[in-house]
Length: 441
Image 1 (cartoon, rainbow, N blue to C red):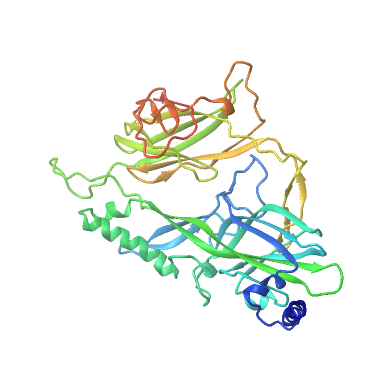
Image 2: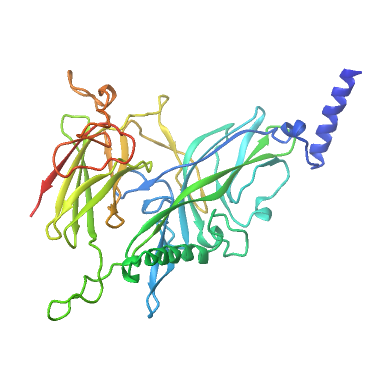
């Protein structure tokens, strides 16, 4: 009797699946019959011309960034425009993510897509064009498994903020009006502390948010039967940068009295170069800063994964360019042990396909973020170097001693101070290195 009941339950579950009836949690595995796994994750990406191959359809600079700008209405400035790094212009947001998938035995990959919104589903009969307000086709190999690959997703701005009449998918910002309004609230809050409007609007700041996207993968049976799909959701982090409006220097009335605007000093220019150190497993990060008046500036180093170093301070005189340098070890190599890697070249109207690419080189990017007295970034600068083996008797990145204690006066962000201003550590130690200063006329 017990065996008959089990057989009856299995048959009933198969019939229900064929009829499109919702499955109970106990029978949900029937609806996941064709797709074994879908791996969909957020990623960081950067595209630097002439350095290394960019992800197909990647933009310019850093992915996962929206800039909110102020516009002149004639009566003053207000937040009312956005800028992005998408290759298709400011009407799209360039997002980076990775996608991999595996079908179960007896199935092969058939198709895949990135869709807007948060969806966790599986089944056998659904057309994504009829269900989702936006989707992006992703080509897949004719195989049981698709290794994880990096995607450049160009999401329409109107879809992200619900300007197309559908539900918004950016958490915390239900409309473009709310995005602009958040900047205006920050301005009014600064003015409430005694700032002038001009000074309040001159300060930039960033806000973290995320976009709800899902990956849908279909697997087809090798024999008779229906195609099966599985949809996996993910929150893709983005950085919203509110851009300050530069204001002219303070005016002085005749007779020496103060008048007009009173504006805080600003860092006006940040440049960065990255070069390998000869006969070493290290890179030199050389930066150049300029300000409009004497000021102490604070900055951090950002790698391609968005990780920020401890803070460093540098004195600027408001006239000449001040240089600083940091020496950091090569990143750890992580080559694929079984041969060439897989990349996804551009196809018409989709992302996907496969091509081979040489591996074994170390690549990455750095960027300087000045956060005081104002927010300003350098360009994203990359490197592409051969893996390094240190000479005999010389320590390499993998054999470095323990970093000095955070209480040490020479320790700052895992970098050893070699001259210049005293840094202000604000985060846990990072990998060791050296830092120094240059004097430029």
